[in-house]
Image (cartoon, rainbow, N blue to C red; front, top):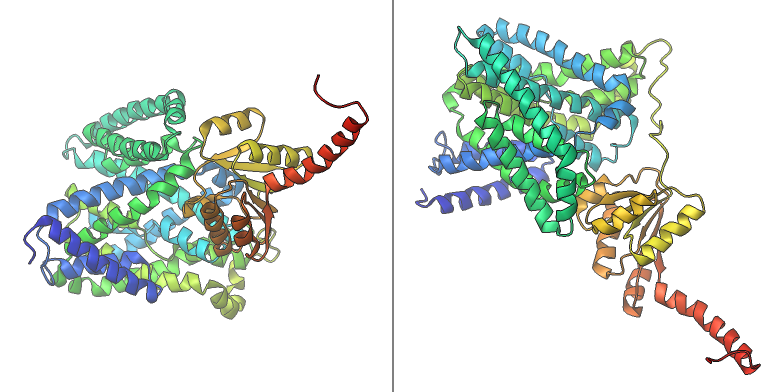
Length: 552
């Protein structure tokens, strides 16, 4: 056993990295690997870790960052553009899964309170895992991908509301639960109003001042997430709710993508401690007793949840292909299911055996659903005839090439002097342009001119993922740094971008490197300017020799 806390944390990170590499080779989500690491290093197995308080603290910070990013990326516009299907499917699946899940859990012999919590935990699916898998498959912009993300956002909102209720009930006694819920609701409303006022009048101006420093704006985002989470916990709401609201308060700013891109790596590192902490608390004796219930509930999640979604979407007139592919997004439970169960145990509503049950269901469903999503179209091709029962006789929705808004003619990276000239030329020709830049003053000037803008560093892979490249005709980088251009080019190739790619070079060496890349148009503003200047000088020289030139 390692003596120092630092040594134990280092050991956890080393083992987690090795387990993560193995999981990636096996095409399994890292969540499964991290929970397995927690079981391995915990008292039930090797007993390597005694720094449980430190791990739990890092886990709390990880949860705060995770929920902050969920709130930050809360895209209500996406829910509106996917129509009522996101709201109806999201809420409908939560209701039906809860009712059926409660019946199964209660029939397995669990008490009513435990059955309620387990049933609710079964309703939530992992937005992070689904978005990652759909992004890897280039399906986020397809109709089923947009619908899936839409109803997953609805689920995220529901789980936060559930956390508020659990926290309110948890601090009250049997006699004053109603009173405590009412007081918590009042405190929550006041807290929400305060956050809304700050988001409306203070935060945008503060972010504008901090945006000149990329490091400072990221630090502010982290401080804001933790501070609001702590304030929420202090007034009787949960830390999780505060972190979520902190993200929502910044979701409408132009800095959301930049903050998300910078903090996602920190989230990935810190959240592993939550799953490790979760795995380390599992007891083998309890786990063995939960095997049969876990398998039955996992079967319900893997099969029943997609069926519920397909039924709802079928009634709404969607074709069976779209319904099936979207339905697979709910074939697993979420990291929020585990957080919800852990919160319920912390307030004394359920025991450790219920938390172990939910954790086992999470490991099973997250692992198996990965394969279902990775091979979703192949599975659909085999079982399509049997899915006709989920489709109306005359389905009127579900054409996969449904567009979402007008496409951009060009995404321009860099809005400075040269970039501004490029933007002016494109707009004069009638093009719709989006400009990405790190300078808030440049972006402010462009916005005043009516140009759509996005704040962020294009070398951040997460920011490139956030670009609306679907149906965008061209990407033009006016930043002359070779490393920036090569990083952008690599990201575009990973995303399989098929449009025009134009990159900027100042010197001959940079130009040669970029010209060697297939499918790249190289812009050389100085050389092209010189090509225009020389003929003009020749004309002026001719005029001067005729006596009309020269300085007086």
